Length: 526
Image (cartoon, rainbow, N blue to C red; front, side):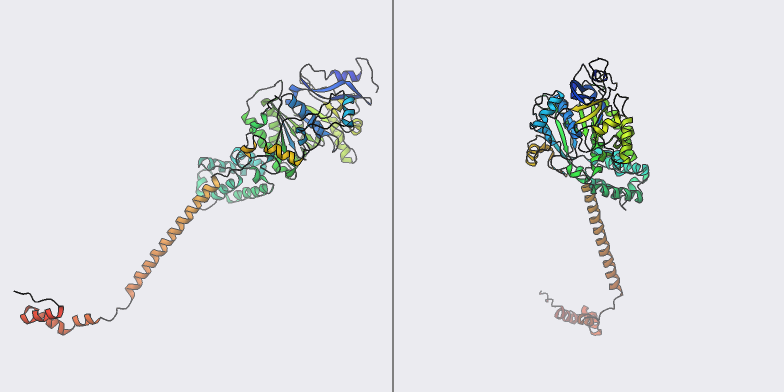
């Protein structure tokens, strides 16, 4: 294929599909017939970022830099951004980039006016696991449905968990962390608590055992660090900086990249919480927030059917709240078909075809694109680093022509910031003092423990009293059955015949005199 100045040439037709009238992000320059055409810019309308998207490509093809490039321009346009940074290499967005020959060459090729720029950023961590402001949620806010999904409970077990939450709420037992939930489950199958749910079906010991084992496995994923207080207000992600630029919220996840269930849990809670709190707004000129989830295959690997259904529904509905979601992964097949169907914007970096599975994945990827003037199978295996095949939604919501693109270079640092700089950024944040220190106030665990301690003390006191009464009865019984002792000397004297004879003579004068001498009474004087 060769370039032509004919307005009807394929290059011009493709470029015309990206000539938007409203605000748009600049992605790069069109590639056609082996040449980079800086006068034919490939863009994405700002208003269409809420229609979700996918950034895919093999390792080392530059998809993380694409994520950074888009995030920078969103921030510059006043749109807050959330970045889930699994590998820890996106934190550099907070610092200006470093000019070098490669960046100058790339900027010249794509017609970019490159200027080193850092963007306002906040750094977060899951419950304090790693560097960042801790993000925590309470078990209560998570809710029984979401908790059932991450614990992979069946329908019957999910219903039982709903009863547990209902009981805790009715009794004022706050479910803050996982030990609270564990305490309530254990109590409801104890001798003391069995009757509490009897009127509404009860909780079987078997189901309680399943829930407790699932909680143990979940805790081993590090989830106990995530649940607690102070609970994070997801509205913090919607902030803009003092200069009007959107705040870039970077969730640092290197410490939990081997704990995909924990990462999945956070995603589900975060999207559900935002969806619940935000009003319906429909299509906006620019989204309220755009999410980027790097290494999205970790999100979906081993995911339950219920989890996938939840993600699909959330992605479909959250657009109406002004939230855009981008998944960043290796191949489109990493994303379930029902989710992929919701992603209107596509940036596909190079794919490899070294194995039969790779070749199959390549063919499947080609089929997900609209018809194009390119041989996509050949093109996708021949793209260089920082190049991609792009199709987005136009301002009217229709797919744009497929465009091979040499992407612009990010203006911020392409790599992680240093550990000291990251720590300083975290601790200087106004949010740090609000969320850094965990709070363990009295909740279900403490209340149930206190009640059980009181019950045990009362039981011990009752047992001690019963034992004392038993011993008293035994002592009385022993006393009644014991042999009578020999009479004392006084008893012998009183009982003698002589004493009785003397007593009979008490009425006589002589008797009275004798009595006085025996009992020590004095003779009355006249």
